[in-house]
Length: 271
Ligand code: AP5
Image 1 (cartoon, rainbow, N blue to C red):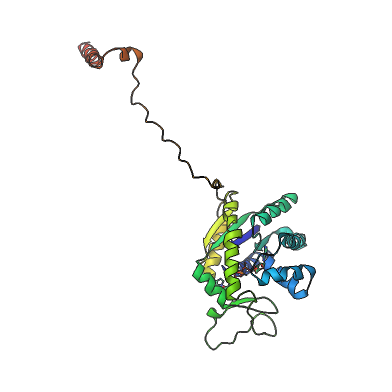
Image 2: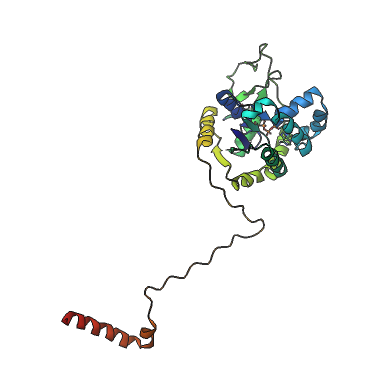
């Protein structure tokens, strides 16, 4: 399967992508993780991306598309993948469609994670991750007194907060989501690819909803709303006349018409 997980920062895309990796063995392709790794390694892509990431802005499309093109060409992506955090705007979505059309492997589904704003802010504020293996945790899930250490990496390093998880950058990332990423909802709805889930629930329940959404039959494509135009209602059809009056009947005055009907009925009875 080729799946896109769509949703605001902190809506749980990365957490659920990991679950799909464990369950179906599909690779998780997270542009955020790929960019953070490029920054850490000091590559050309990384150096170019760092300023935008620190400011909560989107990294330039050509950089992200370059990274995605390279990643999708790796052998493990041939069986399918979970795209997490990509595409992030209409231009990226169109470029992805062209890339996938070229190799005859279109997307199967786009799942939208719906989480209220307040919960998103709470989750991001509490997020901590392992600097070695990238495993994601949340301080709200840790019992009081428990130390924040990774349980996955062998040396159990202390967890760290992402540099872009500070209040000012989070506010910027949420604005960028509203302006540039939200339009993808209608974009994929119009292609019959979008499935939405209520992701404001415990992690296991969200996983069940995600898998449920993926096995549902493909939804019908929705028409795009015409931009800037009010939706015009079709004029109501006139009620069809109960009974058509023949030309001959119409020529006669109404009273005479009634009489002739009665006359005919009497004649039928006397027969
Ligand atoms: P990226 O790393 O993609 O960040 P994001 O989209 O902002 O998403 P997050 O990683 O913040 O959240 P998530 O939805 O994965 O939530 P998570 O599972 O961690 O991007 C970072 C930056 O890179 C961008 O700002 C941009 O600069 C750049 N970038 C990346 N992609 C780009 C692109 N395509 N184009 C241009 N620029 C790009 O969960 C969050 C927390 O909540 C965790 O602590 C988790 O434990 C917890 N949690 C998860 N699920 C639940 C639950 N059900 N209940 C309670 N807590 C939960």
